[in-house]
Length: 282
Image 1 (spheres, helix red, strand yellow):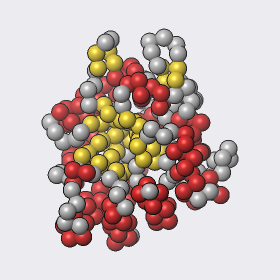
Image 2 (image 1 turned 90 degrees about the vertical axis):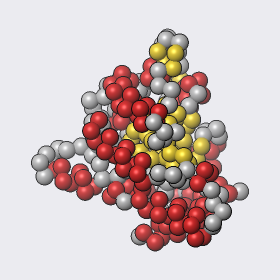
Image 3 (image 1 turned 30 degrees about the vertical axis):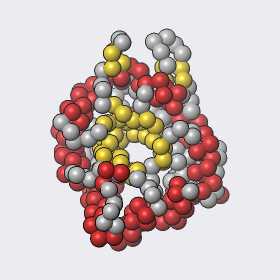
Image 4 (image 1 turned 180 degrees about the horizontal axis):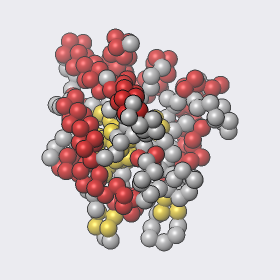
C-alpha cells in the first residue's frame, strides 16, 4: 500500500534513520519512485528542516521486476530473473539517477551477481565495473559495489565466486577506485555462509570471511540484519529457526556477530520496521 509505505518512511526519518535500501525491481519497479515521493513529501511539508545531505540511499540493479520477467517469459520460458548485460544495466542506471537526483548520497550495487551462471570469477565483472566507474566518475553516485545473499559464495559453497582482492587490486594499485561496499541481507539462516572463509586475504592460499577481507580492502559492509526473520524466513531454513524470534532479537544477534557493519532499513513488514527503528534510534 503506497500510503502505508510513505507513512513508514516518514516514521523512520523521524526516528533518525538515514540509510535506506531499495532496488530497481522492488514493488514491481515502483519502490524507487515511492521512496523519492516519501522523501520529498517529508522534507517539503512534514519537516522543512530535513537535510537531504544526511540521507544515504542504497539501491541495486541487475534484477528484473515481476512484470519485466513475465514479459520475457512469453518468448523464453526459462528466462532468468536477472540481466547483467550492459544495455539493461545502463537503462536501470538512468532510472536510478533520475529517481534520486538531488536527494542525498546514492550507492549502487549489483543485485546478486553470483546468481548469473555466466560469471565464474572476478574478472567476468570487469566490463560492468568500468560502466559503474564511469557513472560514478560523472557524479551520479558516490560509489558502487555488490549485493549478495550468500556473502559472494559460489553455488557449491566455496570459494567465493568474486574474490574482492582480485576485483579491486591489480598489483600494488587500486583497480576500481569507486568500489565502496558489499551488502549482505543477513540473519541466522545464512550467517554461516557470510562468515565462511571463502575470500582470499592475500595472493597466497589463505582465506578469510567477507567481513575480514572488506576491512583489509577498505570497503564498507552493509547488513540487512533482521529483516528476513519471522514469516519472511525461507521455508528450507532448519539450522536456526528465526520464526520463533522477534525482529529485535534477530537484530541483536546479528549486531553481535558483526558490530562494525552499517545497518540498512529495507523491510516490508510494518512490525519489523517499527521495532527496528526504535532499536536504531536508541
